[in-house]
Each structure stands twice: as C-alpha cells, then as structure tokens.
Length: 298
Image (cartoon, rainbow, N blue to C red; front, side, top):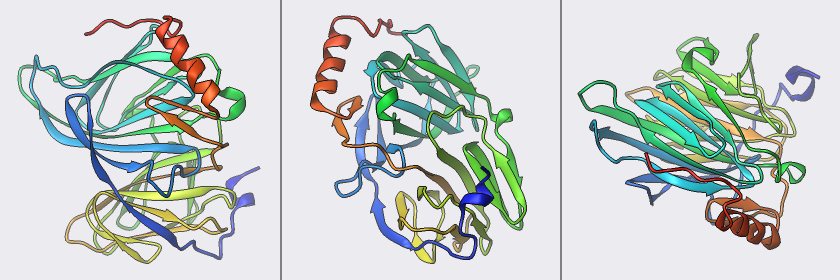
C-alpha cells in the first residue's frame, strides 16, 4: 500500500495545540525539551524531543552524555552542526557529521554514551535534535540494535523555496516522493524541513498518523497558526495533510515527526519507557545486575 492510497489529499489538518519547550539539564549542557509535555506525552510513537545547542565544543573537553542505560525505546540523534560519536555496550560505534543521524534500538536494554567530537585542533559548534520512540508492546524486549545514518544517505527534495531531508518514513508532495533510509520498527516519519521567507509547502500525511512540527529556527506558520523557535505545533488527529509557511526575515527550519499512535499505557521512568510498572522494575533490576552490559567512560 502506498502513501497515496492512505491520505486525504483535499484536506489539511489544523493545529490542536502549541507546546513551548522548557529548559532541562542533560549531561554537561542544557536542552530545550518539547516532549514529553504535561498534557501531551507522545506524537505517534515519538515520546521525547530535546533540542541541544548550538554551543561551542573545544578539543579535549568532557562535553556530552556519559554511559547510561535505556530500555523499551529507540533513541535518535539528528545532527544539525558538528560531529557526534556513539558507543554502546553491544559493541556498536559510529561517528556522524552534520546532516547524519545515530539511530539506536534499546529494546530489552543497552548502555550507551554520546559525545561531541571536534575535528582537528579548533573548536566546533554542536547543534542537533535528540528524540525517542516508544517501541510497540511486542518489541519492548527486542534485541538491541544500531544504525549509523550518514548525511549522504538521506534523500533531499527541493521545491519552490523549500527543502526537505527525509530521515525516516515517507514524504510525498506535488508529485515529489522519497523514502528515508532508517529501518523502522513501526510506521513513522521524520523530516528536516527548511523554507525561505514567503515559501509554502503542503505534504501528504497518512490518515492514521499523528503529526507535529518543531521549530528549530525562524518564524512561520504551521497549518495557518503562527509559530516561533522552540515551539512544537501538534496537529489535530484527523485525516489530512500538513501545510508549512515561512514568514520571518530568515529561513524557517523544522523537524516534522509523527506516525501511528503509541501503544499505551506509557510508563516513564528516567531512561526507560515501558507499558507497566512491572516492566520498569524488570529493566531496573536488569541494569543493576549488569544484564545490559557495561561501557567504560571515554
């Protein structure tokens, strides 16, 4: 079944609510956190959105997030600027530069660490988005996995004043279409969109998908509603596509994310997102017993 078979092309969704990100500490830096929100815990399977940077990283520094566990989720780090190194207790390693992504499946449990990685002797700017998906009930205890997605692997589509990089899922608009390189475990989408001032983009969304757009930079409109940096516009759960418009003096940059609704109930406990308190307690015991493996400090 294609995207065209499962969309309502004559209708556009409206905005259900606007979430303004709050500041939260993570490792050696702070982030703007848009998900989870007190009134909205997920958009499709996406349950977590942190916007980090831009900040300067110097060679030899201790920036980043040291070894820590996850279970029941996938973690996705999409880099806007800089370089990022991933390591985990299953033996996976990977380095991506701007435009690339680290995509890790925690499943039954894994320990990982991520850090900025300067190149050469000079400082670099680090800037990106980290997201989590909750795994479907049947995959909460799946084996851990990892995908390194290089910037060159991500298809880029361009139109009249707009650019879309399709990291995951499908994109379709006005005869243009692409499929993201990420191997996904549930139906979802993740796009990086850029619109020049005055440019507009209308794209199809599967009728059964939830969808939202997070503003990285610039000002514009999502479904006709004004948005600004660090805001997440959550669209109504109804059939229809998404309309984005750049209105500011500079380009509007957004992450568009969504997919089939998360399978609840969702139980958040630190780095674990499960469907029950019992599952969370099992993950805690597994981590403390060393069953998720170990990872040394860099």
